[in-house]
Each structure stands twice: as C-alpha cells, then as structure tokens.
Image 1 (cartoon, helix red, strand yellow):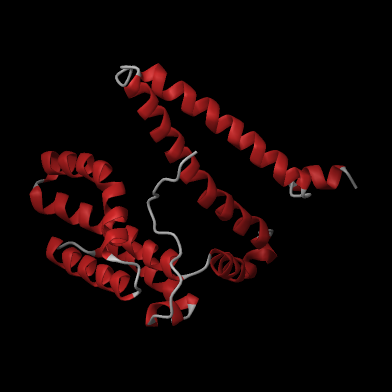
Image 2 (tube, one colour):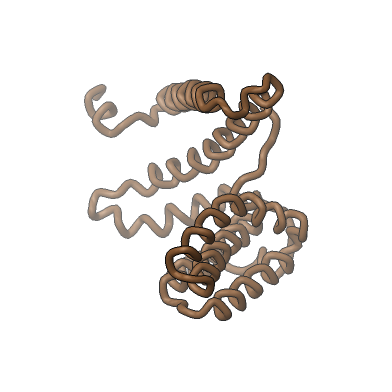
Length: 212
C-alpha cells in the first residue's frame, strides 16, 4: 500500500531548539493547548495561539509544506464542524472552535515532528509509571499508543486506495463499494497485528496468567 499522510507530522531529524527541548516541556505545551481549547473564549486569541504554534513548527525545520499537509488533512472535518457551529452559534464561536482544534493538531505535530517515536514512547512510560500503584501497566499503555500510531495511517491509506479504485469503476457514490473493502482490510490488519503481538508474548493479562 502506498504511503499516506496522517493528522500529525512524522518525526523529522534535526538539531533545532525545538528538537533539543526536553520532552516533558513538549508534553506540557501539548497539554496546555488542549486545556486552552476549553478556556479561550475569543477567536482572536485562538488565532494568535495558532500563529505561535505554527511558528514553532516552522522553527523546528519541519517545513511549510509539511505544515500545510497537517492542516489540509483536517480541513474537511473542520469545514463541517465550522459550518454547523456557524449555523448554531454564529461566526465568532465557529471560528474559535475551529482555530482551537487547529492549535491542538499543530501542537501535537510539533511534538511528533521533533521527537523520535521510541523517545516519545519512553516518555509515555515515564509519565504513566506513577499510576502503576493503581494497576496501570505503563509498557502496555505505550504499546497501545505505538499500535495506534501505526494503525491509523494504515486505515486512512486503505480508505484512500479503496476510494480511488471505486472512482475508477464509477462507484464512488456507492457506500458499499467504499465501506466494505475498508472494513475487511481493517479487520485483516487487526488480526495480523494481534497475532504478531501474541507471538511476542504480549497478550491480555488474563491470558498470560492462564498460561502460567
């Protein structure tokens, strides 16, 4: 299957100030952007926050084209959300909501574009370790994120491939021709992933205890 873009940017090797920033600070920035999306009530402030995050993304050396790709991937969804909110709550509120979502997407992209995946997962394990006393499994949590990061681009790619094939056969308006092949591909991929994890002894905790 050919490569496809995703909602957040992949890691871009570099030595910028953003790359050298400690991971915990990047995590805090992303968390702050998520919290700010609920607290900001002025679309102009949201726009300023978006400009700041886009500037940080460009300073990382990831490039304007990659930034445009990140924004383009969420444009169809935001167009629908924005239109509905405009109809329900008016233009300023719709603009604020759309801009806040973009702030979160770009902030997450700054994190993933400047942090190797393994370092990111190690950071997730470190953050989740204090919750081990309540039964949390930090390594399993990090594994879940790793599988998610790998699976979502596959599903997006599968949909794009199926859509192109359906368009070539003149079936782009047929929901069955679009949904069914993606569903089958996704289930097959999930089974393959599950088999690969089980082969490495990464099954469910109950299964591990049952085999002891």
